[in-house]
Length: 536
Ligand code: PEP
Ligand code: MG
Image (cartoon, rainbow, N blue to C red; front, side, top):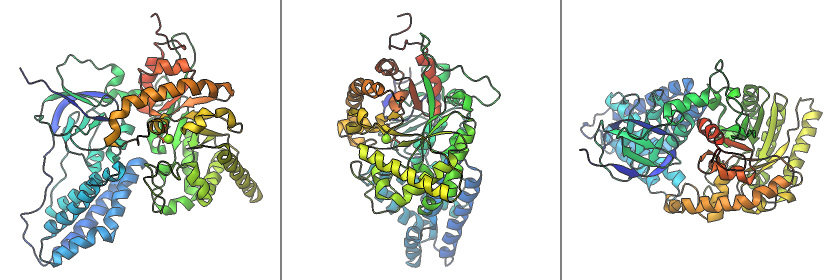
């Protein structure tokens, strides 16, 4: 009888899947057998340029989110700071591949040793770049793995994720890795279950595995654990996608017939490809910060207006909530001196009000796009009514400016995230807010003083959920009492076991990654609006 196998790590992308393990080679290639030649500087330059060309070709056909990740790798490869140390090593007598590997390994280790999880998470991009250039130098073809299998390894490279066909399901199980890595972001948006941080373990190639990306659990698949149809990685994607031409799902209702809006969270318009607007009740949160991949993007009003218009056109009149840039904390403003690790300093609306040049461009782009559909705008990290008043003033100013220049525009309703405890406790003080959206990802971290994504404090997870639920039980009724629309767009909305209680607090609108919508709808249908179990 095979040995029992039960590993627990951190869930990086929800969903459950089963499949045979594909155990990746433990040691990344190092090119040490190579003999130096007098053409090594040229060979390395060719390999770097060849990799950039290959990434460009991939980026041209990739969706926009994947494209942004590939662009990040291209920028790194074009940065002289990255390649210069290798050339110095070659001039000192090392072969091209040996010099490249040694200097890149220093970068990888530097990233791995960083205290901030989000900087640590970039180490897999550096390792990916290292291995792609090395493959090019050694004339090797990057390895793929069988469709439908569970990738098992220390980490997985973004390029490997992007080159793999996930249509047959599968999952990712890592001894290292990070919930904040580019691959984790891709896995969440494509509905590929992923578990990270399992530590050292031994799994043989071909072992049949059951992976629960929600619970961070990996087990030998005994065939006894059944996946619900909407919990299989492959079918989650299909259920969420509901392609045009298929019958749209009925509006979500509780068992006693109360309508509940189930909306989609997106980080990029590319995530809407293959998703029908009739599969959801609109977009409850469009995080715009991920659209900005280089500093020049902030001034490009037309580029922003195009992205916003694309989402509004897709929605065919359904409400679309676009959030103002939420930089700071885990999402540093690219190339500025603002402390990237500051969750408590200039973040969200505070940063935007300190940098009105950035805010004003976004406001103009939003107001131009507002004519296309049913837009509402959401301000992140609002703490005081004064911040809302200043933001409203900037909208009014820019509307006047657009009108004077004869540029067609609309004035969208402006709501606020309730994700800072001070604001969530006093919703009635925000009389000018058009609506409220609770952000439980930030509420949880601010209630427990435990940074999100920080491995060292992840043991406080259960405490933070309990505290956030208690906090919501007091604050949601107060927000509803203002008579304004109230929703929830944090990750708590995707947790079936919490949905009944969230209903009982009074929530009737939830927004979540598209891959979770089918499961949430199905759960809602089994409970009454007061949170009691139907027929229970
Ligand atoms: C939240 O804080 O719950 C939220 C939805 O916003 P973000 O995760 O982008 O901070
Ligand atoms: Mg937030």
